[in-house]
Amino acid sequence: MSYAVRGITKNGAFRIFATDTKDLVEEARKRHRTTPTATAALGRALTAAALLSLDLKTGRVMLQINGGGPLGEILAEADAEGNVRGLVQRPNIHLTPQKGKLLVGQAVGKEGFLSVTRDLGLKEPYQGAVKLISGEIAEDLSYYLTVSEQIPSAVALGVFVDTDNSVQAAGGFLIQRLPAASDEIIEATERVLQNLPPITTLLREGLSPEEILKRIFGPEEVEILEKRPLAYRCRCSRERVERALVALGPEEIKALIAKGEPAEITCDFCGEKYLFTPEELEGLLAQIEIKRRRELDA
Ligand SMILES: [Zn+2]
Image (tube, helix red, strand yellow):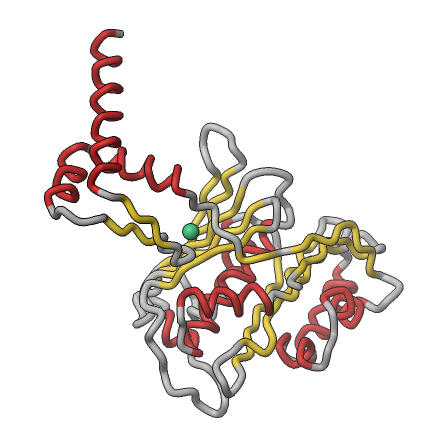
């Protein structure tokens, strides 16, 4: 089961987050039928969104990456309840790995932006963006957090794709410096991080998110404050799709009815298909008409 932990170091120097996202990234791979390159890129973005969502008590966080590379746009979203979903514009793109490494940065591209939106259910969502540095996503996110949100952060994200294209390991960590951190502690931590094996190596060795944090800071320093289950789960429903259709307006719905066959609407995030017969579409048209009249009466 995918899950994430949130905590602090007992010396008060860092806020620490880590996650194992193998199951949810594998679910994303199946739903979007991604190639290994696309699985790694989408999986890193989903893992990043999951890590950022650990701060939320309500609402959701959305990550948008558009680097101009062959994969196109990547969206990833996670909410306070541990639901994670996402999509990659061109899931069928695959670049030949080099030296055993999937070419995520090249596939994402770096001519573009990474943006983060936190929707806490208030009037205005909070949004920030930075130019991409490498398209590798972890580096870009740490740059975003450090520069745009002004919280010095270290981010690791990793997805290891097996020879049968399934996800063998996925996860990441996020470390954020607190004002109490001394130069000495910061330097020592930087040294540890520089010598740390890739996150997928640690996960494939069987280390849990808690154990990865203990490996970085020492078992005595880590205080876990919360453990949160995560799953690939979409927020779409027939009702939401109906609302989206109504929002398209009467002309679009009439065009669908004119085809004389059921309209199939597919959710981009999860692949769920919603069918609407011409009769049901007529019903939606009637709803729009009733609403319009009410507005005229008011
Ligand atoms: Zn959906």
